[in-house]
Image (cartoon, rainbow, N blue to C red):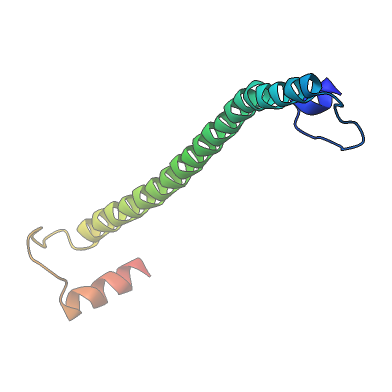
Length: 111
């Protein structure tokens, strides 16, 4: 009976018959709230912390993938610049966008 009262399940098939028994049942029920409530809340907090940690790890992995893609694009642009410098060696670096004639030369030599 006391285990059922402490866990606050209370099946109802057993109940105290005296005032003293009812008092003990009330004390057992209230103590069960405190005795079981603390470990359950600690377990819940630990689950929440682990879930938050997992979300952070997932975000870090996705950010690393995004940065890797950006780095690959930067390397591709650098490669195009080197290729263009080899195809058009006399062109000044600060000349701005390619002219139509330069585009045709690059397309012809690269293709």
